[in-house]
Length: 208
Image 1 (spheres, helix red, strand yellow):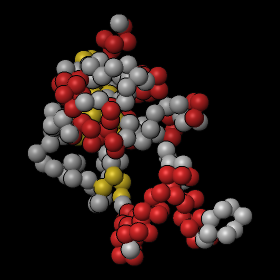
Image 2 (cartoon, rainbow, N blue to C red):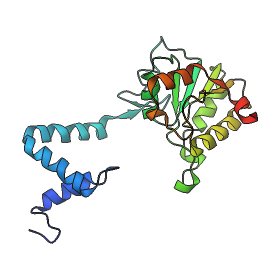
Image 3 (tube, rainbow, N blue to C red):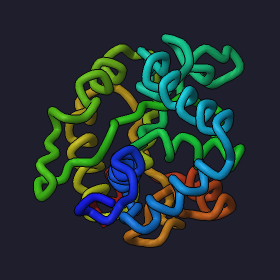
Image 4 (cartoon, one colour):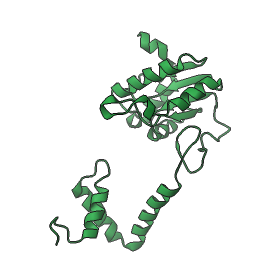
Protein backbone atom coordinates (compact mmCIF):
# COMPACT_ATOMS: atom_id res chain seq x y z
CA UNK A 1 0.00 0.00 0.00
CA UNK A 2 1.45 3.41 -0.97
CA UNK A 3 1.92 6.36 1.38
CA UNK A 4 -1.46 7.89 0.48
CA UNK A 5 -3.28 4.86 1.85
CA UNK A 6 -4.59 3.61 -1.50
CA UNK A 7 -3.78 0.01 -2.44
CA UNK A 8 -3.42 1.04 -6.08
CA UNK A 9 -2.04 4.11 -7.83
CA UNK A 10 -4.63 3.56 -10.58
CA UNK A 11 -7.40 3.70 -7.99
CA UNK A 12 -5.88 6.79 -6.41
CA UNK A 13 -5.67 8.58 -9.75
CA UNK A 14 -9.31 7.78 -10.57
CA UNK A 15 -10.45 9.01 -7.15
CA UNK A 16 -8.45 12.21 -7.55
CA UNK A 17 -10.05 12.90 -10.93
CA UNK A 18 -13.58 12.36 -9.57
CA UNK A 19 -12.84 14.61 -6.58
CA UNK A 20 -12.16 17.51 -8.98
CA UNK A 21 -15.89 17.63 -9.76
CA UNK A 22 -17.89 20.32 -7.89
CA UNK A 23 -19.36 19.07 -4.63
CA UNK A 24 -17.42 15.79 -4.74
CA UNK A 25 -14.97 15.16 -1.90
CA UNK A 26 -12.44 12.36 -1.62
CA UNK A 27 -14.80 10.02 0.25
CA UNK A 28 -17.62 10.45 -2.25
CA UNK A 29 -15.17 10.11 -5.13
CA UNK A 30 -13.89 6.85 -3.64
CA UNK A 31 -17.44 5.46 -3.34
CA UNK A 32 -18.22 6.40 -6.97
CA UNK A 33 -15.06 4.76 -8.28
CA UNK A 34 -15.68 1.61 -6.26
CA UNK A 35 -19.28 1.50 -7.51
CA UNK A 36 -18.06 1.66 -11.10
CA UNK A 37 -15.52 -1.11 -10.51
CA UNK A 38 -18.21 -3.37 -9.09
CA UNK A 39 -20.26 -2.98 -12.29
CA UNK A 40 -17.63 -4.76 -14.36
CA UNK A 41 -15.57 -3.64 -17.36
CA UNK A 42 -18.35 -2.98 -19.89
CA UNK A 43 -20.24 -0.31 -17.87
CA UNK A 44 -16.93 1.38 -17.04
CA UNK A 45 -15.92 1.43 -20.70
CA UNK A 46 -19.36 2.80 -21.67
CA UNK A 47 -19.06 5.50 -19.01
CA UNK A 48 -15.59 6.49 -20.18
CA UNK A 49 -16.62 6.42 -23.84
CA UNK A 50 -19.57 8.72 -23.18
CA UNK A 51 -17.24 11.30 -21.62
CA UNK A 52 -14.69 11.00 -24.42
CA UNK A 53 -17.41 11.37 -27.04
CA UNK A 54 -18.78 14.38 -25.17
CA UNK A 55 -15.38 16.06 -25.17
CA UNK A 56 -14.72 15.28 -28.85
CA UNK A 57 -18.11 15.96 -30.41
CA UNK A 58 -20.08 18.44 -28.31
CA UNK A 59 -20.66 21.83 -29.92
CA UNK A 60 -21.94 25.23 -28.90
CA UNK A 61 -24.69 26.66 -31.08
CA UNK A 62 -23.29 29.38 -33.32
CA UNK A 63 -26.51 31.34 -32.91
CA UNK A 64 -27.39 31.16 -29.20
CA UNK A 65 -24.34 29.52 -27.52
CA UNK A 66 -26.44 26.67 -26.16
CA UNK A 67 -24.85 23.22 -25.98
CA UNK A 68 -25.72 21.27 -29.11
CA UNK A 69 -24.93 18.20 -31.17
CA UNK A 70 -24.83 20.38 -34.30
CA UNK A 71 -23.57 23.83 -35.29
CA UNK A 72 -27.11 25.18 -34.85
CA UNK A 73 -29.14 23.82 -31.93
CA UNK A 74 -32.60 22.28 -32.22
CA UNK A 75 -34.31 25.33 -30.73
CA UNK A 76 -32.72 27.84 -33.11
CA UNK A 77 -33.40 25.60 -36.12
CA UNK A 78 -37.06 25.00 -35.18
CA UNK A 79 -39.24 27.03 -37.55
CA UNK A 80 -42.14 26.76 -35.10
CA UNK A 81 -40.35 28.95 -32.54
CA UNK A 82 -41.02 32.70 -32.38
CA UNK A 83 -37.77 34.04 -33.85
CA UNK A 84 -38.64 37.61 -32.85
CA UNK A 85 -38.72 36.85 -29.13
CA UNK A 86 -35.32 36.43 -27.45
CA UNK A 87 -34.72 35.23 -23.90
CA UNK A 88 -31.33 35.99 -22.33
CA UNK A 89 -30.18 33.45 -19.73
CA UNK A 90 -27.04 32.72 -17.76
CA UNK A 91 -26.46 29.09 -18.67
CA UNK A 92 -27.63 25.96 -20.43
CA UNK A 93 -29.28 24.87 -17.17
CA UNK A 94 -31.55 27.90 -17.36
CA UNK A 95 -32.58 27.05 -20.93
CA UNK A 96 -33.56 23.60 -19.69
CA UNK A 97 -35.46 25.03 -16.71
CA UNK A 98 -37.48 27.44 -18.87
CA UNK A 99 -38.15 24.82 -21.53
CA UNK A 100 -39.58 22.53 -18.85
CA UNK A 101 -42.28 25.15 -18.10
CA UNK A 102 -43.61 24.90 -21.70
CA UNK A 103 -44.51 28.61 -21.39
CA UNK A 104 -41.89 30.10 -23.69
CA UNK A 105 -41.94 29.67 -27.46
CA UNK A 106 -39.17 32.05 -28.49
CA UNK A 107 -35.41 31.55 -28.82
CA UNK A 108 -32.52 31.99 -26.40
CA UNK A 109 -29.18 33.67 -25.92
CA UNK A 110 -26.84 32.05 -23.37
CA UNK A 111 -24.46 34.53 -21.74
CA UNK A 112 -22.24 31.82 -20.31
CA UNK A 113 -22.14 33.29 -16.81
CA UNK A 114 -22.78 36.43 -14.78
CA UNK A 115 -20.68 39.52 -14.12
CA UNK A 116 -18.88 38.86 -10.83
CA UNK A 117 -15.81 40.98 -10.01
CA UNK A 118 -15.19 38.86 -6.90
CA UNK A 119 -14.75 35.83 -9.16
CA UNK A 120 -12.82 37.73 -11.80
CA UNK A 121 -15.67 37.56 -14.34
CA UNK A 122 -16.16 40.73 -16.35
CA UNK A 123 -18.42 41.67 -19.30
CA UNK A 124 -15.76 40.65 -21.81
CA UNK A 125 -15.87 37.08 -20.45
CA UNK A 126 -19.55 36.72 -21.40
CA UNK A 127 -21.42 36.46 -24.70
CA UNK A 128 -22.55 40.08 -24.59
CA UNK A 129 -21.06 41.37 -27.85
CA UNK A 130 -23.03 38.82 -29.90
CA UNK A 131 -26.16 39.83 -27.96
CA UNK A 132 -25.59 43.45 -28.97
CA UNK A 133 -25.29 42.33 -32.59
CA UNK A 134 -28.66 40.61 -32.32
CA UNK A 135 -30.28 43.67 -30.75
CA UNK A 136 -28.92 45.91 -33.51
CA UNK A 137 -30.12 43.60 -36.29
CA UNK A 138 -33.75 44.66 -35.98
CA UNK A 139 -34.83 41.01 -36.07
CA UNK A 140 -36.19 40.97 -32.53
CA UNK A 141 -39.21 42.83 -31.19
CA UNK A 142 -38.56 41.86 -27.56
CA UNK A 143 -35.56 40.78 -25.52
CA UNK A 144 -36.30 39.20 -22.14
CA UNK A 145 -33.64 39.40 -19.43
CA UNK A 146 -34.16 36.17 -17.47
CA UNK A 147 -31.19 36.10 -15.14
CA UNK A 148 -31.23 34.91 -11.53
CA UNK A 149 -32.36 37.36 -8.85
CA UNK A 150 -28.99 37.34 -7.12
CA UNK A 151 -26.65 40.32 -6.74
CA UNK A 152 -24.62 39.06 -9.72
CA UNK A 153 -27.78 38.50 -11.74
CA UNK A 154 -29.10 41.99 -11.04
CA UNK A 155 -25.73 43.54 -11.88
CA UNK A 156 -25.60 41.68 -15.18
CA UNK A 157 -29.23 42.52 -15.96
CA UNK A 158 -28.54 46.23 -15.53
CA UNK A 159 -25.30 46.14 -17.52
CA UNK A 160 -26.95 44.32 -20.41
CA UNK A 161 -29.95 46.66 -20.28
CA UNK A 162 -27.70 49.72 -20.59
CA UNK A 163 -25.93 48.11 -23.55
CA UNK A 164 -29.18 47.26 -25.36
CA UNK A 165 -31.32 50.29 -24.48
CA UNK A 166 -30.02 52.29 -27.44
CA UNK A 167 -31.57 49.85 -29.89
CA UNK A 168 -35.17 49.80 -31.12
CA UNK A 169 -36.31 46.76 -29.18
CA UNK A 170 -38.50 46.19 -26.12
CA UNK A 171 -36.42 45.05 -23.14
CA UNK A 172 -38.33 43.17 -20.47
CA UNK A 173 -37.50 41.01 -17.48
CA UNK A 174 -39.19 38.09 -15.78
CA UNK A 175 -41.66 38.97 -13.02
CA UNK A 176 -40.33 38.64 -9.49
CA UNK A 177 -42.16 35.40 -8.83
CA UNK A 178 -38.74 33.89 -8.35
CA UNK A 179 -37.62 34.79 -4.84
CA UNK A 180 -34.73 37.22 -4.36
CA UNK A 181 -31.47 35.31 -4.28
CA UNK A 182 -32.87 32.35 -6.20
CA UNK A 183 -31.36 30.83 -9.31
CA UNK A 184 -33.69 29.88 -12.15
CA UNK A 185 -32.76 26.21 -12.19
CA UNK A 186 -34.05 25.79 -8.61
CA UNK A 187 -37.39 27.54 -9.16
CA UNK A 188 -40.40 25.27 -9.50
CA UNK A 189 -41.87 25.04 -12.99
CA UNK A 190 -45.16 26.76 -12.15
CA UNK A 191 -43.46 29.75 -10.50
CA UNK A 192 -40.90 30.08 -13.27
CA UNK A 193 -43.59 29.69 -15.94
CA UNK A 194 -45.63 32.51 -14.40
CA UNK A 195 -42.52 34.69 -14.14
CA UNK A 196 -41.85 34.22 -17.84
CA UNK A 197 -45.46 34.87 -18.82
CA UNK A 198 -45.98 37.88 -16.55
CA UNK A 199 -42.82 39.75 -17.54
CA UNK A 200 -42.46 43.51 -17.17
CA UNK A 201 -40.50 46.28 -18.89
CA UNK A 202 -37.02 46.40 -17.41
CA UNK A 203 -36.99 50.21 -17.13
CA UNK A 204 -39.91 49.98 -14.70
CA UNK A 205 -37.86 47.81 -12.35
CA UNK A 206 -35.01 50.32 -12.46
CA UNK A 207 -37.31 53.22 -11.55
CA UNK A 208 -39.10 51.25 -8.86
